[in-house]
Length: 250
Image 1: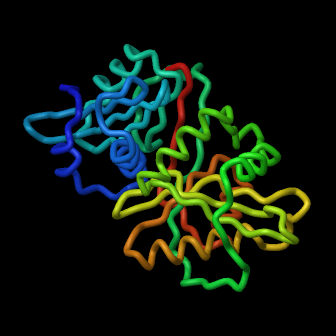
Image 2: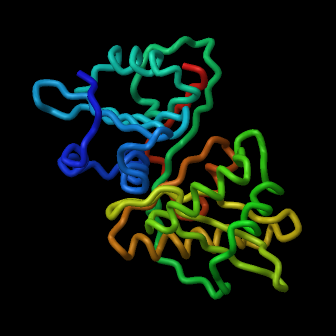
Image 3: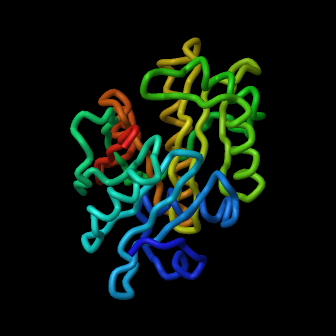
């Protein structure tokens, strides 16, 4: 049975994997009662076997071996999801013709790292301009007002932090926490301006942030949708722990 989720449901789930981290962070950022976000739990014989979140038309799934994939797939179709992100180890039976993106999930397992680069917190507009310069088919940046609304709200709730380094006063490289809970963090928006690449800035920044977060007792994850990015993260102290799949127009 799939039903609306409650705070008690989330309090009873102890998972710290990236899929549940993504859902719980969204719940702790926005809560219940808003039109553009929603949360559901799949329950079987009193056991919480899956969690589902929606932000606008983008869905995320936390699945377990006890999940009912047929029920979840039917629910996602009924909701007319624009996209659906989930652990690639599970088969939901979506059509092979559906457009999709696959990639790797990596966790920071490297040695503690302290860099001598200067870091600071950039303003939203400057960060957005950097992300737009670095946009690609696998690194899509939303419209500015949507970006600004979401990051402002999450930052005010302590669920998003921005970190950057500059060269000669210009923003050169950035990383931010796109999902945060007390137990785990997902990093994203890792970008370096084309003028300052091949200097090791992103690697130093990511390792510095990951070391700090892990020192707080939190797991640190990234999602990579390209072989080049996966190799970058592996060389930065991350190890592949799972695969993800994102289906569009499920």
